[in-house]
Image (tube, rainbow, N blue to C red; front, top):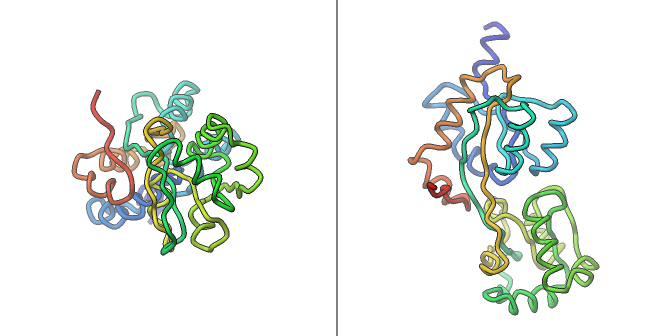
Amino acid sequence: MTDSDSNKAVVEVLSTLALRGVLVDFAEDFRARTSLAIAATYRSTNALLDLIARGATADMTILTREGMVQLARDGVVAAGTTVDLAQSGVGIAVRAGLAKPDIATVAALKDALLAAKSIAFSRQGASGIHFAEVIERLGIAEEVRRKATITDSYAGEAAARGEVDVAVQQISELVPIKGIDIVGPLPAELQKISVFAGGIFRAAKNADGAGKLLAALAAPDLRPVLIRNGLEPVPSD
């Protein structure tokens, strides 16, 4: 097999952590359908944008819609290749087996965050940026930051290890973590739904394979895979 053939047998993806569960879940089915393997690198959207700005590339990328708009505007992803794939809200989790705090209302969430001895959330991810705005809005930013573990990876892992009482992240980033229980989403008044989109790099070595993966991820029959990984289809406008 030549290097060119080898490149075309793999689709290289730079993906937000929020879609990791879907790509892992779907990889074998996609290989069976297409004979293409998925080779993915996972980071938060902002971390990926930083990598891409420093020259990182692949066949395709999956980011927040806002990040994809930026890459399309800059000509990093090919025109006409971007597509919305899924959406997710921000949620709260605790170590498996522990009592779940009441977060059903804004007041209850505020009380739960103040009562928690320690909290983990992401530094650069969309959920972490939004949560930082939430605690400012609630007037408890100083108290929360004093007891916060701020991570560039999965906040739920800190809760699973018993290092923090509460983890805050995209629900789709909490679902894959073993050893935690998801309490639920933030109250609607404080919620932010992030839409995740895919696009093909202009420098892609396997643009055809990337196109097949994007089409498969956007197909209606992927809905059950999205849902079991904490995501939802993006409503049609």
